[in-house]
Length: 340
Image (cartoon, rainbow, N blue to C red; front, side, top):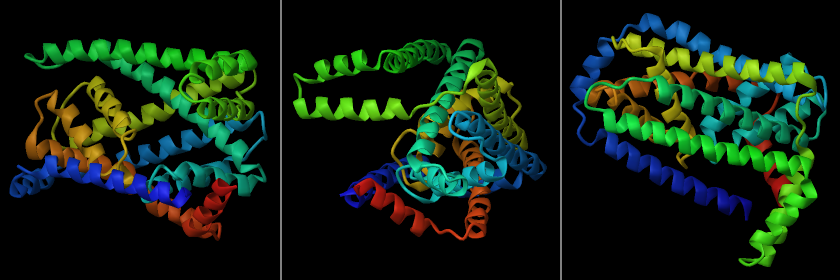
């Protein structure tokens, strides 16, 4: 059953990626694209790659703070596990890299995989809140070219809507944490008219989920988590600015923040492993807001995607080989766990 669901998700993702690629390449002049690549200043690649790995390092550091309530883990285990997880996300469908990441660290540190995975849920919530702040800051400070006033207003409206929705999620999680029984009862009552079985299952899943969540203890732990969150995204946004400059595009840093917001939403859409197509379409769409279109925009999108996804693959595979593990072995273990 698990494999069947995974296969369906993969097929849907491949179809969406294919559609995006068709939209992107249908009117592209490959000679002009080759000229865009030829005119690129490749000196910007090295610092951009370094910053990308710095971002992964900060992710490992934040993960350490998130795991403190469970165990004092070592960065020498966290960083390779992070690289392996992101490598797996690029090669496996349905974001299975998160399960791989949890399995590898659990094996290294002797922690139950479910407890590690719960920390990654908090990790994603931290990402979501940080991206929300980036989104709000971007949408209220960026200045699009003349003639884009309608788009700018739409962005501000989208910022408000996203902000309200995310605050709603945070409020729900806070209630679930502080008043667990009352919140579970409320969810059960709301879902009961639709399906008693769904109501019971949702309550059970939410109860298991919240019982596994552990937040960093004390103000120092929370501050460290917040600080590393901003460092993660700062180190992820800066390479976009460098790659724009590599193509001779001079834009304020808010433009790179704007592009990053689009890319974050792109990876939420079902796609092939590595988010091929959806990632590129999101990047090209964001660049069009600054009147960067056609072959130049697609060339920039290809390089930004390649930089964010390709370097971590050999790094993750090396860490996997060093730990005498394989993706097949990990996937089989995760599948058997999902069945039980």
